[in-house]
Amino acid sequence: MAFEDAGRYEHELFEEPLEARVARTTWPHTGFDQLIDEVAADALRAVWFSMTSGEVFAPYDGGIDLIVESARRAGTLRKVFPPDWFSKRTDGF
Image (cartoon, rainbow, N blue to C red; front, top):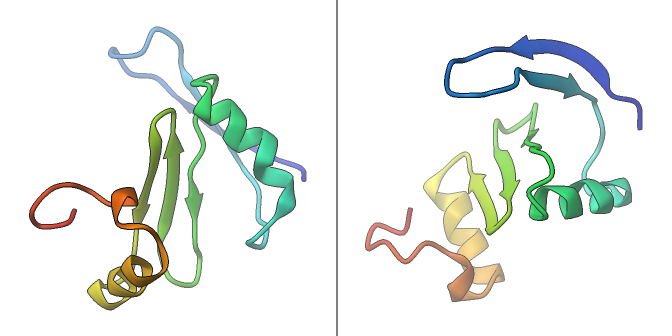
């Protein structure tokens, strides 16, 4: 998969500028395993955005955040995945 340069972001909170790269792809895609492993090792950051639903998949070194399009979609995911994969907050978010 070829990533294109999407620019740099500089902020006083970061020692180095953040460099953004983008690629259009389909999901699921088997080519993301190494990228997700690097995110899990805290070696880099990556975020996926769905152009159709607006959902966001954001892995990090301790898990993932998934921002879904609706409460209904969240309910569906709660039926599919184990309860300990979800937030412990009382509101579920």
